[in-house]
Length: 143
Image (cartoon, rainbow, N blue to C red; front, side, top):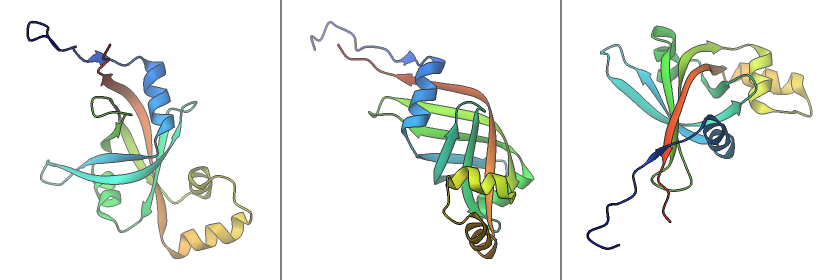
């Protein structure tokens, strides 16, 4: 790049691009809020339901992130795009649920749903369900 040329500026992703990025990935960084008010972040495996604008994350009932969501439901999920300059953030309010439907929605088709749910109960698995109220992100296009 010529030293007189400026670098390209990041551009906001469209809603369609944000939905596609969330759909293409499966790992993100969940930000919850500690009792001190500081953010707590953890890498998570997630499932995105674009029709319902819902993100589901499986965890166990005793994990810190589940306890923090119960204490303060405001969360964000940061998802990296295909390059270091691209990302999406989904913000919303979350709830913690041990509902069978939520566990199955996260896991997808199971050959023996009853056995699957029994295993989930033994492991004290719960779903952090985020109702996404805001999506934003950027990309940096090089030509």
